[in-house]
Amino acid sequence: MSKRERVMRMSVEQPLWRALTGYRVLTMLYAVGLFVSVYDDYDRPGAAIVYYVVLCGWTLVTLPRVQSAAACARWFLAVDLSIALAGIVLTPLVVTQGHIDRGGPTLPSIWTAGSVLAFAIKGGWRWAAFASTPVAVANLIERGHPARDTVHNVVLVWVASIAIGYVVEVARASERTLARALEIEAATRERERLARDIHDSVLQVLAMVQRRGAVIGGEAAELGRMAGEQEVALRTLVSGGLTPVARGPVGRGAREPDAGPADADGPVDLRAHLAGYAASDVNLADPGAPVEMAPEAARELAAAVGAALDNVRRHAGEHARAWILVEDEPDEVIVTVRDDGPGIPEGRLAQAEGEGRLGVALSIRGRLRELGGSADLISVPGQGTEVELKVPKTAPARGKAGQ
Image (cartoon, rainbow, N blue to C red; front, top):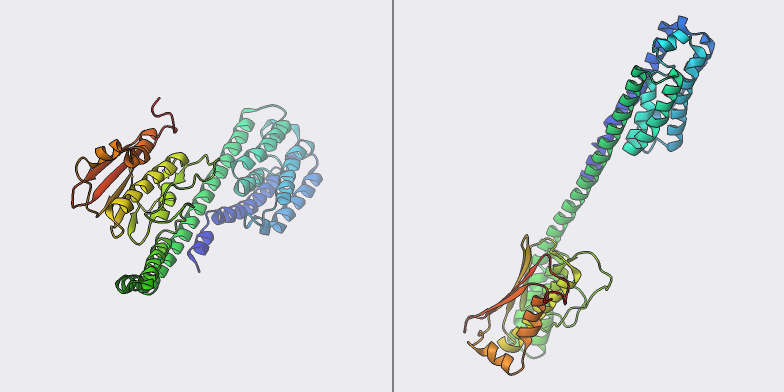
């Protein structure tokens, strides 16, 4: 038996349905007992007996209908409530006026509450409120005026049924959440198992092909490079299953990501925009959970990362490695791009801007400035370069940051 099946069998609804079944039988016997005990109050006992025959027969025959929500059809609820209402309205026609003045019970008595509770368990608090309303009206009609005890009973049934209906809705939502969590847990376990198997076989072979190809050179080097790219893609798939946003060349040669759907109005996962940059020489480390940002902010931040990686490819050499670290802070998102290249000589950035090469000034800092963020560059000659990109969670719309 699976965990989800055990959850369904432990459903909070099943005890409620079983309790309702017992309630209907006991209140049926109680109503008949009340009739016998106050037999002298009935002007037309024959009509009452006919009603009780119908009530008892209906209650016993329909016991399977109150075993589960699936079995409790709408037509059954409608007929069940109609029998209860008919008994309440029929009461003044078969009893003496003194019975009514003394606040005597109606023909179905508290059996009526079972009909309302069936609505509550089946459809929640809204159905309970719907069923309670005609019962309240029928009781007021039977009594002839809004007596205190009648109003008290009506309000009690109304509140109790609505409360039970609400509890049932909350319980169902909790069960769905638990079932979904169990599905995710099972999927995660299976993914971990596959990841172990793949790591022990396919990934090791691809890594070996990459290393041997780099050593042999020539066409083997190209084959090794392709094996390295496939290793990264497969590792990303088994670890997180992220689908990269469609873009140009994957890896450090990547430029700006596609704009994506123009009508996107909800937050997007930044990791999907950055996944395409992962390559054999670019390691991507993310929090393992969605990093939600506004669509435009995510695109611009990913484009800034692409510009930083492009600088690594241009200035650190083809054999330099790069690392992308994503941090999801409460108020901001921080993406750090680091490489193991020779670093940037002091004054080189100012010289590049003076010569008109504005990659860092415009492609990186300019983008972050428009998002209300910042870009800090730290470089030590011989120890590589680190670019830290910060974007606030409440980033302003593009083009408004400087206004």
